[in-house]
Length: 138
Image (cartoon, rainbow, N blue to C red; front, side, top):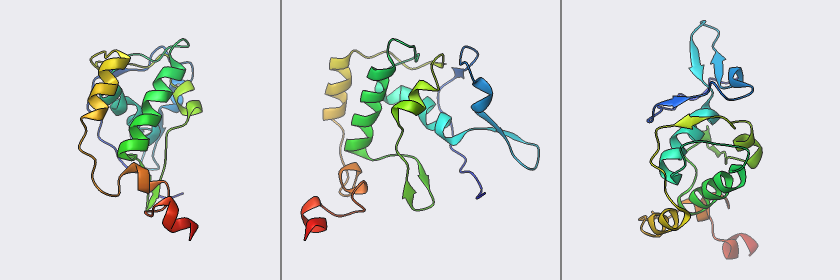
């Protein structure tokens, strides 16, 4: 198995209420423990999407906000050169996760997303391997 990427985690967080919380932590061959990279990405995304707790009732909204963020800005999670996008199932496995994110209404989230300065080649090209759909189709 390749070395897992270390992703810095910005907000304070708690996974005590996550059913399989032990999946969030990984033990490296050295014996050191680190946060699973997928969990680290989800924890960091809570700041950007404005949701401070993942519950059974908001899984779909969390996933929708993450998917919109990644579609527009690209994913922050890569394994080598391969971008990895968070799935609904990834979010579902984190029900019970709490962070110090500032809550945003859906309207505040969309307004914030509209104001993002999007670099050329961001998420809208990333999923297509760096080309437009028209160029890929040719």
